[in-house]
Image (cartoon, rainbow, N blue to C red; front, side, top):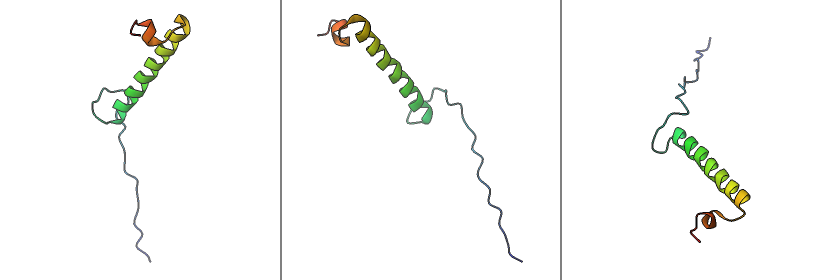
Amino acid sequence: MTNATKVTTPVVVETDRNAWKFGFTPQAELWNGRLAMIGFSAALLIELYSGQGVLHFWGLL
């Protein structure tokens, strides 16, 4: 008879992915990506509707 050891995978408790956490955490990186997409989309919409770049739109150039 052989001694068989039972291998189990550890239980990982999923934390709230939408929580506001600071530092280099997965939650912070998700929020960083979401806000970057909103900012990029806003810049594209400004250029599309105004016919000029964002800096020209704000009067910086």
